[in-house]
Amino acid sequence: MLELKNLSYNVEDEGKNIGIVKNVSLVLPDDKFFVITGPNGGGKSSLAKLIAGIYKPTSGQILYNGQDITDMSITDRARLGIGFAFQQPVRFKGLTVKDLLHLAAGEKMKSSACDYLSEVGLCANDYLNREINASLSGGELKRIEIAITIARGTKLTIFDEPEAGIDLWSFSNLIKVFEDLKRKTQGSIIIISHQERIINIADEIILVADGEVVKQGTKEEVMPLFSGSTFKCQFKR
Amino acid sequence: MDKIQENLLAEIAGLHEIPTGAYNIRANGEGAGRRSTEHIEITTKQDKPGIDIRIADGTKRESVHIPVIISETGLTEAVYNDFYIGNDCDVTIIAGCGIHNCGTQKSEHDGIHSFFIGENSRVRYVEKHYGEGDGNGEIVLNPQTIVHVGAGSTMEMETTQIKGVDSTIRTTKADIADNGSLVIKEKIMTHGKQHAETDFVVDLNGEGSSTNVISRSVARENSTQMFKSNIRGNNKCAGHSECDAIIMDNGKVAAIPEVEANCVDASLIHEAAIGKIAGEQIVKLMSLGLTEHEAEEMIVNGFLK
Image (cartoon, rainbow over all chains, first blue to last red; front, side, top):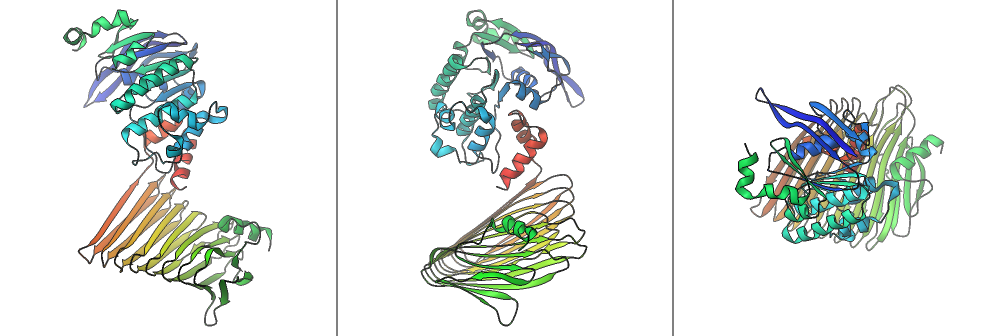
């Protein structure tokens, strides 16, 4: 179980102290599929990075299975079983898809590298030895990032806007990837997303706007708050 | 051959036993073994130190190993090796120099390699430099490579210097005839107070000639590097050079690229990128469970792979 207690994250910008995440408290039980959604710039990605340890909170606490991980490094959190798929995948000159898949899957390679790649619609023959560099398109990089994250088989997996940069054809396949993941994974999945089709498969939706959690609940409870201008008027300040 | 020499040989040529095919092993300034084959003849130069390697027309899928190892401190030598490669060949040449310096005096090997490549041949040239030893004596390697690529021929040159060489100045000069091509892949990692300099001059003389010079380097601690390249397009040709360097600690790298088009149909490109390891790369690998230090090592090893 993941618990966020009064979590805040502020940044300095031109001498001003700006709150990005404001006093957020959340409880995310195990084995559920969560979607964090809300307007751009509302703090969703920052919240995900706070959980993965990429950002350090200004105040508050993060508990994972009862253990305080607030001051833990990215590495220690990863080893504890937290996975994170970047919104903008990182490029590496010289490192191949195989290198990172192997690092992610480790000794416990549950299925072959081929399976991880075919899950995201890529053929291992074409991609395993490709360098993760500028020769890959944004969509390819994104799918590889998802495959690497799935290969880790972590207990808590966070995907930061997996649909961003993915073409329409790939998008319907992506939905299938997450549907499969939901079925197979024993653990929790948190997806930052704007996409209704991803929201549709969530057990719980967390609506974040202006750095605050506006609502946590089922699709039926949260979705009515989305209706276009109503949403803007209510929460966009 | 003693253990130290055997280790050096393994480091530079991957050799754990006598290689198959032609070879010439030079140890502490003297011949330590040689074999010519039906198509590859190795002879000692009469006028200066070094050997001539003559590869007959039509020699295919054969290799030549010519490693040099130095385990005596204070040995300084300049060796001239000339390769005469016939027409329609497909050969691999593995050179390299390993120095173990336990003393206080400088050990230096300057290898001057000249390649005369005939027509429609393919040559792969692999050269690895390695230094070790716990003495204070400097390890210096200044290789010079002179390449004449004949019409329709291809030379691929891979040079690697990963560890232990205090000072190196690598000079490569090449001229390329019609439809010939030269690919150079250089990998360098320096540390401590080491200094490495590379200087490539390629003349694309022939119509349809091409070259691709790719340098990847890592400068760690207080080491310094200088990359110079000059590609001259003297005919309808294509030239590309790329210098990619990672700097760590107080490492310094300078790149001075030069492309010179002397023909309106010459197409020449240079790319250079120098910088530290991107923070996001480290964060990504940490999110896969590596420590910061392990992440850096993986990035550097991959970059120089």
